[in-house]
Length: 373
Image 1 (cartoon, one colour):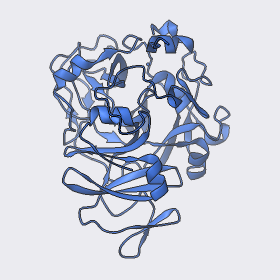
Image 2 (tube, rainbow, N blue to C red):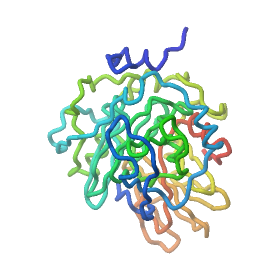
Image 3 (cartoon, rainbow, N blue to C red):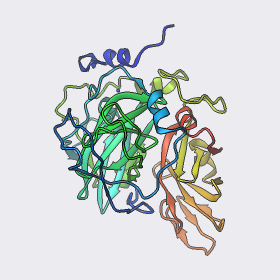
Image 4 (cartoon, rainbow, N blue to C red):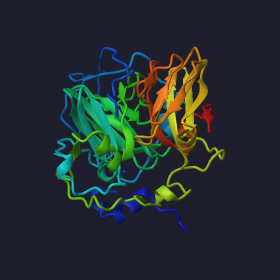
């Protein structure tokens, strides 16, 4: 059977007119000062280059190869730049007014300063980026259907768009202030055709939890939910790639639409891992194994880490654990060495940003990763 292009997949969902892809999230996160974005052009948005502040992290995350080489590996995903339109004026509704989600539908949840929001996977599959505001902070919620990754970034005064390129089958974003390319999973700048020499730096991230609508609503009943009233004509009941509820199509197949940077046959390609990375390296835990074992240990670079599952939301967290303190599960909670009980997302350890990813994508970007399962 001939392999479908991404353009054909989107066309099958009536997108051909486009030209062709918890706890408070700030816990344990970076609060580094923002840096001013560099120069560049902004042809598509009218934003003035250099006039917008794009917050960046204190430490740069690792890259699998040089930024220039990464640019050379980027491939067209079918739709052109902004052919998959970001949501730039999102609307939200109260949980009680939601009639477009089934209990098992995936949502991406976040809480900041008491503000809870949920972004349905079935909406983001059509847009991939939501430029939003969260508790007074300008943010971008990003989702790549091909790699099963949802990540949040602070965006300062600019917005992000879909570049139309893929790297490692993963969404390549661009910011509309400098036109720099940002591969989503790497969260780090690489040169793009509209900005040849960006300052290579990493974005400031925040955690979103991949869970189900039923679980998120029970956990955060006051949540607001992204509305299907996006200003775009889309059938949000139809995912252009398949379905997560029940799982079928691309999400249930071992085939890929685009080649990864590195091919690993250690696990089936779309096995879900909970991945974490710092400037010192990367580590991954098989999500199903973590849910079964509840606690797992490993190493990231020279550091000992502890992975903890959260049965409430069917997710997990990774912590630095240099003293290798022993913890034990106790129902939905975790008991520390001193006998104190903690929620899975609130251990008295430094938490590392962690997100779901398909194995092929994680291994493609982090071929030297430690993986446990």
